[in-house]
Every structure is written in structure tokens, then in C-alpha cells.
Image (cartoon, each protein chain N blue to C red):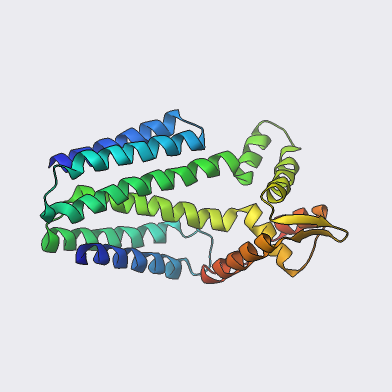
Length: 108
Length: 144
């Protein structure tokens, strides 16, 4: 249980760290910094798991790779989804089709 | 390397092959979940209590790979930006507008918006989603 908690905390810290290094820029722009954060997190986690829990590199690598892929997908989708952008724009009141399309393109 | 390691590597390799071959999202998810479940079941019998944490991490990792690749597939299929690039390459200039109109249709079929005299308005579900999106934009500092 402690091991799983440590992995969850490491994941949370890396996600927070990614947002801090992005500093509000688009994901594609700050991707190098994000990859560095995830790589650093992986090395620390892998070292800790190997040393204190006897967990080999394959399990941690598969987990970390899958976690990065999932985070990247969600983060990138959130940033680029036109549907979500349209829903967001409509929160202030109704908009016509053409206005909604124009505004969605304008904020990108 | 242990048998668990080899099973994990095999599962990820198999998922990658399925991702390449299968273009339908639902079919890919079905394959991915099946592979994950199969690997989880097979390896769980050979794991002692001391290595259970490693088994959980590996299984969750394989599942995360399936989830992440599903999102990637969805983006490849639905991304307006990517479709715009493809349309430009193929000189189909009506594609962009068509894709945006498609999103409006999606919102109607998902009951996120309804048509009013003033235009498109959010339904209660749409309002809830809009609140969540606004919060996520704020948290992730995505400017709109």
C-alpha cells in the first residue's frame, strides 16, 4: 500500500511540476520542459522503487509511459478541443451558429 | 528479467500492434481491455504477496497505455487542426467549416446545447460541463 501511495504521490508531483514549467504556454511549445520533468520524476521513482521496494524497472517504465501518454492526451485534448471551447463560450449566454464558430476560432 | 516483466513487455508490444492495425476506437478499447485482463489474470497466479505491488503497478501501467492510446486515436480521428492540415494538403477548403459545424451537431446530439430564438443555449448538462471546463481552464491556466 505504501508503494502504491508513493507512486500516486510521485505522479501528482510530476503533474503539478508540468503545469509549473508550462507557465501558461501551450503544451506543444513547452513539451521539452515537460518531458524533462517527467524524465526526472521517472528516474527518482525508479531509483526509489528499486532501492526500497525491490520493484524492477519494467513495471515502473510501463506504468510511467502509460501515465505520461494518458496525461499528455487529456492535457492536449483539453487545450485543443473545439467542442469544449464552444461549451465554455456558451456559459455567458446563447450564441448563433456563425458567432459560435467565429469566436471558437478567434480564441485559439 | 522475471516472467512478470516479459508479460508486461509483451502486453505493451501487443497493444502497440493492435493500435497500428485497428482504427476503430471501440474495437481498440475492447482489444486493450482484453489484453490487460488476460495479462493481469495470467500473472496474478504466479505472483506472491511480496510482489503484489509490482503486479498492480504493471497492470495499471498497461491499462494506462490503453487509455492514453485511445485518446491519441480519438485525437487523430477528430482533431480539427489535423483534419485542416489534411484538407489543405488535399486542397479541400470547405473541410474546416464542415468540421466546426460537425462539433455543433455533436453538441446537439449529446444534449449539451438546444436551439433557442437567440441562438444556441446550454442545457443543464451543458451548464454543468461548462462549469467543469471553466474550472479546468483555470487550473491548467488555459487562456480563452
